[in-house]
Length: 290
Image 1 (cartoon, one colour):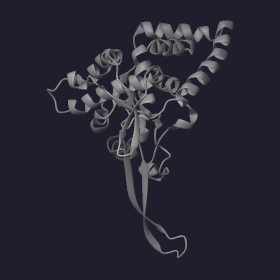
Image 2: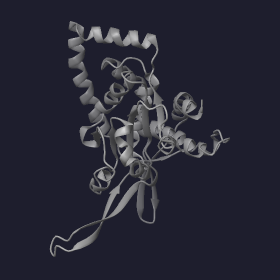
Image 3: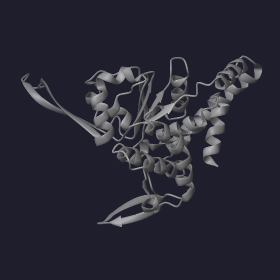
Image 4: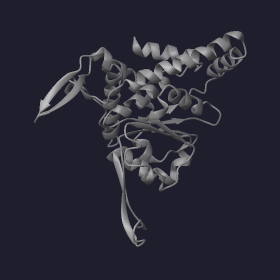
């Protein structure tokens, strides 16, 4: 019951409600090990808890496999080092802070790499020369925003999670905030450190395996809009992410091709069932233009 245990650990770490968002965020962060990871935008009004939700998910990921910034300039991505982002999470606190780098982010998300030709001085002669900088993906992109209208090109590439802003959720958060001031709250804080370490270690064990879906040709998806071409890919990647997270509960199989051995795991029906339930909530919202 891995997914149930993950949700229980989120609760024990003090993250109230938001079960679908927590699970989708965790799966998306784990998808950094896939060839085409998911990208996530958490959308809400100010002070509703979008940053807290992102921080809670990132906190369970290894510090060496995530980069977190408040903002990025237009050129900054191109100079991050060729492999510094490979199979890692790139988190930016506000979508507005990434507006200058949005073109590079969109390219990195869809193409898996970005290159730039830039003028600089030759180290030996001092003459101006053209240098090429290349940054490899794949990278899992994680953003938050208070904007009602998100850049259409960016949104098409992301799963959009909306924070629960109901009164009942506010009451639950208030209760959790009061709980932190008690003796039980102090014990929970100590337990949170242990749970964080446990999840980071477990995430370190994930390998970038290929995922094969033997049921792929039996799946169906909405096809009344051209944008569902990207949403369908997100749906399939969500299934792959569930399978990847369960790689230690699955048989790892091998495919030999031209002297090379490729290791892979297979999707099970339970993975599709989980992805269908999550996609109904998440993709259902983003596909509704209202």
